[in-house]
Image (cartoon, rainbow, N blue to C red):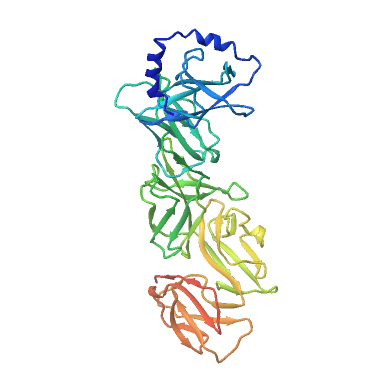
Length: 487
C-alpha cells in the first residue's frame, strides 16, 4: 500500500483522539520478545515513483500485522490501520516498523531504521581527462563527477567502482600513475549538502581500460639503399589518433663500452615530436640505425622505444668498409668452409657485428667467430643469415653485406659493381645438376628462364641495381642485393 495518501487522513483522525493509548500498548510489549526486521527494495525513490518497504518477524509465524513509522520510532504510526504486507512510500525519511498481534496487542521490538532518499532530477555524469579510449600504465588521469543542476546547489559526492581503487567523496579524483588494477567501471552520484535525503541517481558508468605501456613498431623504406637516397621512417603505435606525437632517433655507438651499447640522438626537427607518424631522412649515404617512440600529454608520457631498424648501404666510399672473402654474399653450409670479414678504414680498433632479433645482444664477432686484428673468421656451419658490418673505435659504421648460408646459393658480388662493367650471377647447388630449367629474378620479376645457370649482364647500369635470386626444381636461393655505383 502507498502510505503517503493516508498520512493526512491519519493526522486528521488523531487530532480528535488521544494518543494516550500508545503508552498502554507499550506495556504489552515483551522486553525479551522478537525484533521486527525492515527491508527496502531500494533506498532511493526515483523521480515520480516509490519504493517498497517490507516488515517481518523472525522466527516466522502467523498472525502478525505491522505498524509503520517515519522520523522517530516514538512518533505516531503512519496509519491507524495495521498492514499485513509490504507498503509503498513516496516520501524520503527515516523509516521503522514493528509487529503486533493478539488482543490486547502484543508488540515486537522496533526494527532497525532504514533511511530512504529521494532521487533528484539532476543528472550526474562521469568524465575522464584526458579523454582517451585506452590509458596506459604510468599515465596520469583525472575522473570528475559533474552534476547538471542549473543552479548553485552544493553537493556531496559518492563513487562506486568495479576496480580496486576507492575514490574519495570529492567531485574530482586524480590518479598520478595508473596501473592495470585501476581498470573497471566508475560511477558517481551527488547528494545535496543541506538536504541529505535528496540525491541524484547513479551516473552511467565510464569504463577505464588500463593497458601495459606500448612499444611502437618502426619500419624503414628502403632497407637497402643507394648512396644519397631518401629513407622514410614510419612509427606505428596502437590507437594512433589518441594524441600521440612521434620522436625520431639515430643510434650512436658508445665505443668505450665492451658490449657496444648505444645512445640515442634526436633527429633534426623532432625535439618536440612530430604530429605525423613518418619522417624522411634525406641524402642517406651510409649504413645507419634508427628507432622511434611516441609521447602524449603534459608532462609528456612516453611509450617504450621501438626496436632498432637499420638502413643498409653497400657504399664502398664510406670512411669504413667491409670486404668478404670469398667475395660473394651467399655461401654453402659446411663444416669445412669459412668466410673472412675484413674491416678497412682509418682506425686502429674494429669490431665486426651482425644483425639479430635483439641487435644489442651477442651481436659482435667474439660470440660466433674469431676476431684477429681487423678480420673476423667464421665457419659457415656456425654462421647465420644476417647483415654484417664493421664499427670502428670512433663509432663509424661501414658498408654492409647481407650474407646467407644454405644448400642453394646465388653467386653475386658482395661489394658494389661499377656502371659499364660486365657482371655474371651464377646459381649453384651443393650437388649440381644439369639440363634443368633455371629461373632468375630481379626485384621479384622473372628476367631469365632457360637451362643456363648463369645470368650475364654485359654492361651493368643503375637500373640493374636491386635484389636477385634464382630457382631450380622448386628450390630457391636467398635474395642478394647488388649495388651499382657510378664510374
